[in-house]
Length: 349
Image (tube, rainbow, N blue to C red; front, side, top):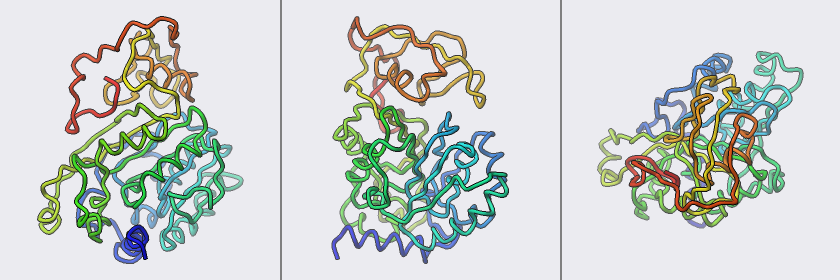
């Protein structure tokens, strides 16, 4: 058995048999208490208690403007986020969850009919498939077929993250979005810790060094990504701290679009106006932790941000003035120019 196969089997064992509820976890890495938008909280009350009890996530990776879209949830587990998304995409949208652990999928599938009745949907708009997130072709996902890929604290568990990102950008449609929460580190994890069953299961042993993550995206043609939220993880378990206390871990929610970007922020004179037409956020739209668009107020943006607003499903909610015919040099990132892992990440501003 290869090292990668050993890690996969260890993860299956940890989440299929060792961990039965969130109370069994030794750290908060897989269950960061992040504020959930009110409109999502209202959907949460419709989800069966057993699904909620066995949820292991590190954020709330559910973006806006999903009605009628096809969403893929990587590492869906028992399906909490899938059932949240099913309510958001609506009966004409579709949610597909992929997971490799039979015990988790059994619970997710057990409640499909229950939730469709609760949502008053005439037929299921959610489906669960067994598979590996490093190989989305085997479960039948075609190139350029998915509007949005989400994942909640799962990519860190993969022993081949480069392949995961290759698959994500293969299945995403042009202009499609990757929106995920996961655990990142400020350095590469020592090999001995990447094979520690507890640390891997607790989402720490496989945490991505943030610069290696950037390089993986670049290798797949994505030269810009944005951090939405970032929270430092406290290692409160004594054994875990003794092993990994020298590493800084953050739970982060990140978004990236399948667009053609430049590798730094360039200034083409674009100005964006948010129309206020997304009903979940009538007053302002938050793209990331340093791009907030108040309704009707002009906001200067770089060329990459312009593409995020013009070439994605968000285009109908913005008026963007300007084009790429005139270049004015690098975009002035102001006070955010010196971002570090402790603060804001991403190539823009």
